[in-house]
Image (cartoon, rainbow, N blue to C red; front, side, top):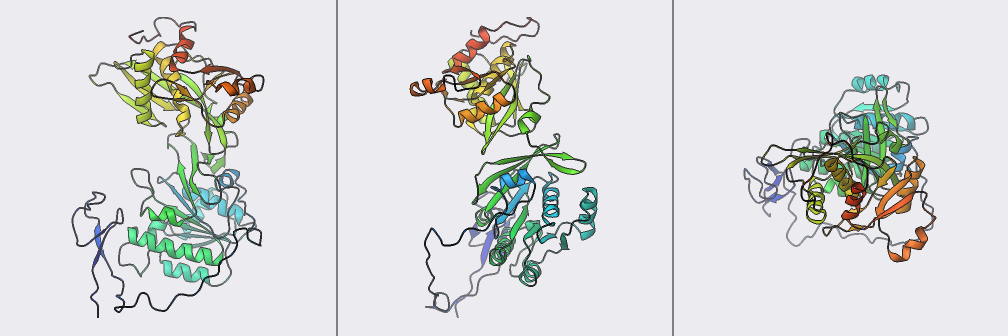
Length: 472
């Protein structure tokens, strides 16, 4: 009989080790390596029991039409999911504690319950606690089936027998445990095993499965990375607790576009949809203020206009402060370096603060030109024109590069009343096609020096409010 080999697995990253150690060599975490029960060894010469069955191959085109999507009547959630819920799909929803994951899914299941069989299984709360939250949200009369359970064997047995549900919510996957895995709930082995069993029964029975996932302090989903590969869709629920806005972002979707977003507003009665996020993000904007610039961005397939704010203040520190909220700090440093080297501006003696108003996080490089304009405006004390939007990518040599979906950005800006746009200089072959077609007055920016010249020609504010940069 072959001897079973002990297996030691890191519960933080899933790396296997031949023996126990205090520190995982793969991820550097301490006291995360746990011994797991080994699989039964097979007799020598046996590769896996019986011979496999022959599988049937079919044409890619297929003979039957795909099943229709099930809409939740929450338009923002349906948009992020690609137009609705697909039968047999698994959706992982992650986010910070208290951001509103459970609230959103309870609202969605309560609305779906009018036309579909919905099951809500919680491992973090009791049934009475879920009922109290439903009463607060005005959903107490919804016909949602509730249960409080953490044993996956019991959950799978309940879902495999009786009436097939249409939608099942597991809140959360980190609280589930399987008695086939010898480790504590929330560990890599348990999360992987429980998710596999739940996804298997969802595919078999054909219902839509929602898995709520916790996130680590770095903002990534807790548990093994393979969990994101196992599911069909990964949604992140983002937002700053200091703001009432919440962003539901798709980072993976096998049935729709990725990087799509849905915007919600947290109210006393739960989450409400924001149908026009651009108008909401710009609602408190004040024109003719230095350091403020409107960026025309694209989130998935949706154009979104947001205000980028910059503050440049003289620093008394040997190392000036640099801070960015809602944008990549490394990209901010790059834009400042380009402005110093290619436009002869001096930021070295100033504290720099950058903020994306409204709590939205921008990830596309098209915001480079808007950030540069906000920084130049804050440094010179001269405002960006209140009726202008800005977008474009900035290269290391100072050139402004074209970005995708230009017409969609301009159309959204015109709809909100903007009159002009600072945009990358188009290619020679596109100049004639742009004439007379754009709803805005286009001011081409081929280099960051062109942006600086916009402020040099503008009327200056009083000297008491103006901040000077050296070297120009």
